[in-house]
Amino acid sequence: MLGANESFPLPGDPVLAEVAAAVRDSHDWAWIVDRSWRLVYMTDEHRRSFAAGIEMISVPQGGHVFGPEMVGASADWVTGLNRPELWGPMVSAVGGLLLEDTRESVEQVRERVDPALRDRFDGLTPTDVAATSFLAMGTYLGSPFRVGAKVLRIRDAAGQVRGTLFLFQPGVGMGVIGTMAFALDPGHLDRMASVARASRTPAAILFADLEGSSVLSRTLSTANYFTVGRRIVRAADQCVVDAGGLVGRHVGDGIVAFFPTQAFDSESSAAMACIGVARAVQEAMEDVAQRSGLDSGDLVMRFGLHWGSTLHIGNITSAARFEVTALGDEVNQTARIEACATGGRTLASKALVERLDDQDAAKLGIDRDSLTYTQLSDLPTATDKARRDAPSIAVCQL
Image 1 (cartoon, rainbow, N blue to C red):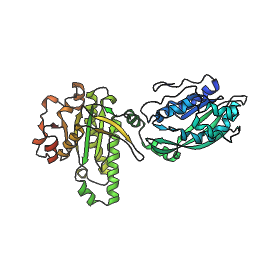
Image 2: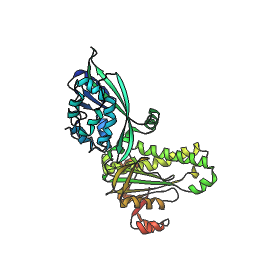
Image 3: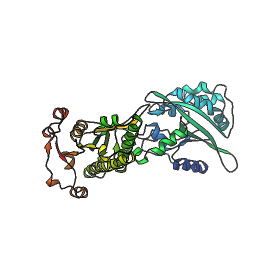
Image 4: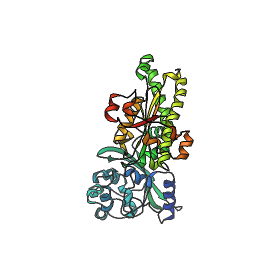
């Protein structure tokens, strides 16, 4: 049984090994079985997907692809063919190829496969086609989804079958997949995958929101206001992505971002990235205003920056969304800081600023010794919620 941190070695058969290397290097979801229908290869990409990106599923290397060990192991998969009945369509689609390769009778095959799949071989006869396809169902956290599969025969130079390749694809067209892949940043997707398993992670936190959005929404047509909001979010998200942070949940034209230490060299570099993004977003708003035919004073963002020592960061995946979120007292406190930063100011907590080392502070042009801090409750702009939830948080203006 290959464990969660072990990749499949390339098959011993050179023809199968060549195909395995190709699907590995092209990052496909793929399996390869030999003529005996033993599983000799499965790509890491597919194993990681079946574990919902948290790690890789454990797989019985060299076991019969429909055997009790394989079907039993699938019960632990987070997603995919993780119920015995979900294997049925696959058996019906390729069972004839299996009978052709193994030269076994239906009775012999039934003795080798998982008991839940034996009836699926009734009425099947040996067949040999170059390629076929089928649509299977999988589940993710109990919810069903479709999986498309192409089945291709692998032959040597003499035309002899050496094995069979299964290429899997989510049950949506390449147009949808391509649009998402083109639009989303691969590095950010990797960072999202790194927090698939929620865990406690120290991080810098950024909250930002557009001041006077109600007035602007009444001034502009609904269509124009939507366009402006979309430009704001896209520009801000790009700043976060470029800095190596994690984009959090969007609420209206509000921005949330996290800069976990695991994605940076140190606490100081995470804090520096957070402050740098606040400045970059401020600059980006000038371009958004110009493109939208607005004055720069029409797009004023307020920023709250804080440090979270005990954040619980993870991604939340549902049938409709895939996003990063964090829980912890400091998240709520950051929202309170941001609400007090009226007038387009950036308020940063002492807990964040003092994470900066001398070198990173100098890069930002911050003289930490000259800064003075004020408790949030003592600010003239302090909100009732700030006085209630985070009165003693010390902040300064950057």
